[in-house]
Image (tube, protein in one colour):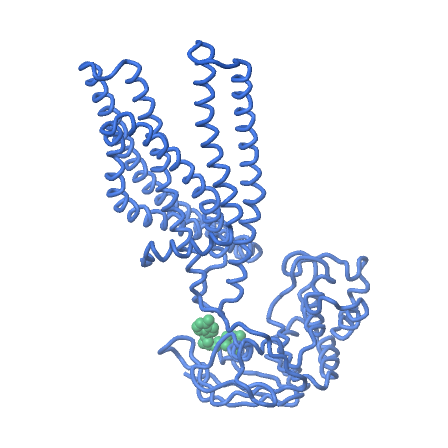
Length: 546
Ligand SMILES: Nc1ncnc2c1ncn2[C@@H]1O[C@H](COP(=O)(O)OP(=O)(O)OP(=O)(O)O)[C@@H](O)[C@H]1O
């Protein structure tokens, strides 16, 4: 079971987030205060109009009615302004926070198998961000206005009958004491509901992303079964939370009913002893209502607040992943080598050593084929070079001065990973990811070097649209466009991880020849293909450590 963070830590975090949303929070608070003022003003305006009509005071009845009309219009205007603020400023605040959170996720250190599921991350970036933004920008300012109304009505009643006023709010301290127990239990129930919701999104995302595999394995039923299990989990958690919520609402409502009955009995007693008029009793009961309705609204805030504690806690967990070193990327000039000096690496403490006192120099301007049986550590080697992982012992150095390699040196690498890495959009848009200001001539040159002449034969050329993961292109075509994108990036060290695996031998040879012509680049090919080894200056064979 996850340990809960102290509420105070979460409140501090929320306070930090509130700073970025000050504009919307203040405008909402001002609108709320104006609405409270308008509602009190309307009471005054109605009383004044009745007094004038019944000749209890002097004045123009037309002017009094006009004032009432003005207040109604102002109330409408405030309502419309509130809707605008909620929608326009609200969407801005939400976009800003979502972007900040996503930026933070992108700055996080690579987590490997310990990472949150991508469906869970998306669920947090959508649901939890919305909950936090709505709470900070709408619920809190709304609560301030409610509190104001509550305080105003209480003071009014207190000035008329202090004992009755106190009896009316006797439920408040009881609520505060009970709320501690409530908050603890509700936080746990809320957490379960939100986590099962994330679980559902993770299963659905995996199904949608792997539709082809699921169809071919004929495992739709199995995957839908997993979804049903996740749904059943959510349903169970929602039922438990609803029971608890119904019971606690019942307790609070009972409390309010009892305190209303006490107020009624008290004023009836005073009426019978002649210390209160019939009109006075009516006024008392109206005021009690005026105190109780904002108090009820404030009580309703508690579950919302608990919900936001859960949402904030889940976002804090995303931020708890350590950040990569921030700073200016350290650009080095070609040719540039990489040196492994006595590197030992294991993924988990006490786990198997993937590398044990490993030393090797990838000399500047040379090409190396890295081979080795499956599981020997080829991809791990790439991750160490890209500073996604840090050696457990030893160091990886880069460049002439042999500086210790950090994520700030990542800008010196071009990495072509395994598999299809194209994004939805046109071929041109995909290529421009490698060099956003590339001219059409540069794009064509990169396509030629990576044997992508087929693009020029397509009806729309570089404007050809492909869907997610380069859908609409063959695997080999997508691989070559990914290489063209890497060539455009033009960095001193190029890492190709099985990047030519889907090419026929002729195309592979032509492409390797073209890449080899870039003489100042340090080329590293992770491969299982002997053809690639023949093109390289060095071959590094990795051995598996048992
Ligand atoms: N994120 C991870 N967490 C824990 N262990 C991992 C992780 N990634 C890989 N490993 C382990 O590290 C070892 C080396 O894996 P790696 O992916 O580097 O091998 P590889 O040589 O690239 O294999 P292949 O040729 O099959 O791609 C394997 O035993 C693997 O199980």
